[in-house]
Image 1 (cartoon, rainbow, N blue to C red):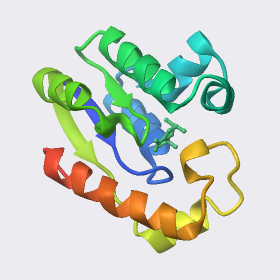
Image 2: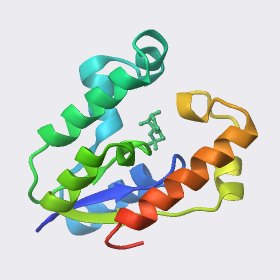
Image 3: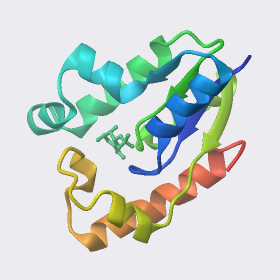
Amino acid sequence: MKTIYLIGFMGSGKTSVGKRLGAIMNKPVIDTDEVIEKTYGLITHIFKHEGEEAFRAYESAVLQGIPVKDRIISTGGGIVESKENLDYMHYTGIIINLQASFQEILKRLKYDRGRPMWNQDINDRKKLYDRRQHLYETHADII
Ligand code: S3P
């Protein structure tokens, strides 16, 4: 089986759907954020002390370090920020984009304080959402 990559905005359900899919398909599930935290420390700490650029470098290293067969991989919402990540996922698997409306994400992440990219005012959240939505849709094999 080709690797399945789940992409989508924060709160779109990548981690939950990944786990469910893994159980149904009886395949291992890997969450890139989880591997980053195990390897490099808490995401909030990385953003605060090393910055987004360092986080993105860790994210790419983790993505490209996962064996690419028979896996379901749930990614972080910003994995699509790197052309290298996009090319890598295309080359090694199938990309599935999970979508939820901005209003729905607002509800789901209302009390969330663990996502640095969400920790900004509502106009900037919406701008990020729109820009990312375009990237997800352009690069997904299945939406
Ligand atoms: C990010 C999304 C987060 C995590 C990090 C950055 C982003 O993952 O990788 O906080 O840039 O959208 P989730 O999409 O699982 O929340």
